Structure formats: structure tokens, C-alpha cells
Amino acid sequence: MKRFFVFISLLFPVVVFCQRNQPRLELVFMGGASAYSGDVGGDQTKFLSDHLQTMGPAVGAGLRLHITNFLAIRGNFNYAVINGADSLANSIGRKDRNLSFRTPIYEGTLLMEFSLFNWAHVLGEKVNSVGKGNSNLYVFGGMSFFKFNPQGNYQGRWYDLQPLGTEGQGVKPGAAKYSLTSSALVVGLGYRVLLGGRWSLGMEAGMRKTNTDYLDDVSKSYYDNSQIIAAHGQVAGALANRAVDKEGNAVVMASGAQRGSPKYNDYFGFAQITLAVTLGSDGNGAGYGRKGKYRTRNRCFQF
Image (tube, rainbow, N blue to C red; front, side):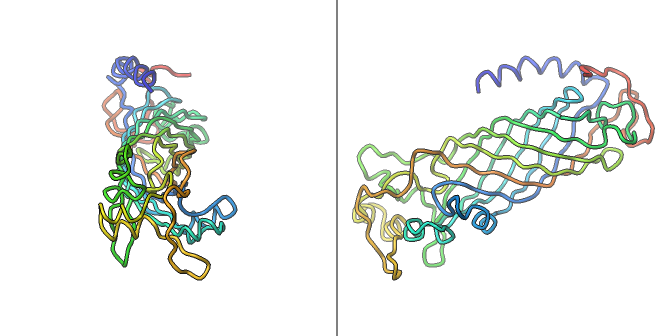
């Protein structure tokens, strides 16, 4: 990650020089759905049906700065809600564990985009050229920095789970409460089409491999439920241990019994529709929206 930011800092002066006579900045709006993969909810045998049922909203906005006709830097802010429920799983073990959660996500990302086609909307010979540069398939990758707050529902009310120490955090010796901020590696694929003038419409999907196993408040093992209740109250005990038997009766899990798996961190991702508008005017002071207007000044780094 350190090398990534060094690369951006070295690239910035070159970008500023190339921006002087030709705008390369776009405002991007995004809206769609979020998905999650972790310790709670569906297993691989029921992946699609579970995740379609637990999709949440994902909206955002960002700025895209074109460096060349193939390469761009993009910064985004996203708000999303992810959730999961063991009741949707095929696995009997997960169903009997009976956990569920939701968490809001407040995310900032710094991404690099690489276009697989020449995107003439920004750097091509004509704004409204026919059959050239009107569509763009691109891949992207970078870093995500986000805040989350897992919650559990008990008797119709949502409770923040991290303060309750559901795996003994804050009660068990040496078990500190997990952080509610984390980072992730982002990879994704997108496609967009020029609508005419400054506007483009597209869709993209991106997955985040996070550096936390607590998006769902589940990672390791159960802790003595009586001690959790003594430290944080009855609600904490109820949300820490929701296990049931085949008849639906409550089961008290022994301290140390498996609750989750710390082997893999959690994932989340977005599938969104994008709407982008180019800001500014061309090197001659004219807007991009004028049909047939040529742009030839300071066309830096054409491939």
C-alpha cells in the first residue's frame, strides 16, 4: 500500500501539467446494491439465493481524473448497508447457530482505472464520433477505507454489537474489542456508454477483500455467557448466544465452542449503475457538448 501512494505522489505533478488546457475531470454518481460474504448466512451450496435475499442499498459519488485515454484516478465516497442471516443457510450447523446482523458502511476509496478501449469521450478526436470511443470496458483496483457498526436484532430492536463483547471482548483476559474502522483491497470491472456531450451511463461491480473478520461481529468462539451477562447485561447474553436445537429450543453453548472462523476475513461488494458528467471546457474554452468539436491541445500521454 505504501508503494501505491508513492506512485500517486510522483504522478500528481505530471497530471497537473497536463490539466492546464484540457479538462479531464468527471463527477460520478453511483447507485445499486451491496452484498456480503463472511461468517454469517449462506454457504457455498446456497450462495446465490441467500445473497440475493440479503442485498442492501449502496449509493455514492466520486471524482474521476483522466491521466491518459486509458488510465484514470478515481476517488469515491459510498454509503451502504450489508446484512446476513443463518436462517437462509443450507448448513444445519449455521441454521442452529441462528445468528444474524446488519451493518452500515461508510467508505472512501482511491482507485486506478484502466480502460480496455480508447475512451474518446475525453481524449478522442471528436466528441460525438461514430463507432469509435463511444463505449468503454474498464477494470479498476485500489484501496478502501471504511467505518462499520454491526448490529443485532433482539425483540424487535436493533442493538450495536461491538460494545456488548459477544465473544468475550472486554471480559475475557487479553480480548480487546475490535476496531470499527478498517481497510480493504478493491478489484472490479465496469462498462459505460457515451450518452452524448458530457454525459455517460454505465454499470460496474467491485469486491472488497477486507482486513477485518468482524463485519458480522462473528470471528472466533463462544465465551461464558453468564460472564457476558454479568458484564454487559441480559441483551448482550441473548445476542452472543442465539443457538437453538432442532425443535427451536434455546441451547447454551459452552465457552470455547466454535462460533465463527478466524481463518478468512470478511468480504463485501457493490453492483451499481453509474452516471458521469465531464466538468469544465476544452482547451479552446468550448464545452464538450458541441457536436463535432475537435480537441487537439495538450493531448498528453496518448497511446
